Length: 210
Image (tube, rainbow, N blue to C red; front, side, top):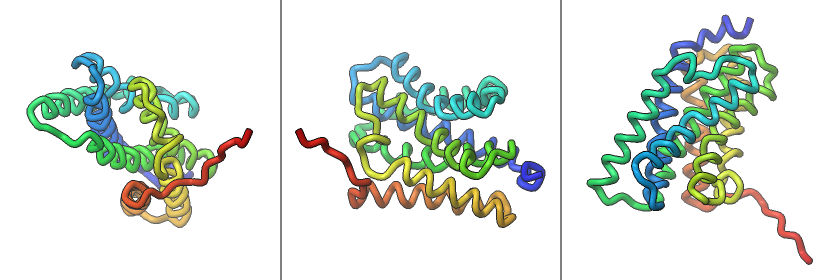
């Protein structure tokens, strides 16, 4: 079975912890531009860090990851509070949150895709689970911050995630070791997202003409 070949549980755990920390920090840095108190920031951080993986697990009919293992919840809370404390003493650029957000997108794309593959999900479903894991938390964060979600209006976001997820699926099918597959796929997501931010790369938009 594909799950047996991948043996990704230890890898998934490490990538998942790094992903929730990165997204929680990104959420706090974004909410720093809003009049939120510490409690509000931590709530947004938890929603951003845990939202995508929670939706993925519900769709895959498995126990929600942070309910099964509270280390993810602890990592998200610690990263959120740490970022809040840092932002209180250091003046940070308003768009700095985009960097940990890009890192979180890459990490969550990998963990989400590998989690779906470990359950023998079809390749297309597995790749879309990577996108859901990577992008949904950011949608929740932006909605709570009363911002248009980056996935809908910004530079390449979900496209970067899907490119990495598809690469991971292909490498898994070729029996590439999971560590190498994760590094390559995550690197693609991060590179595409950062390049899109740097050069303003976007998908075509549709504007109705009345």
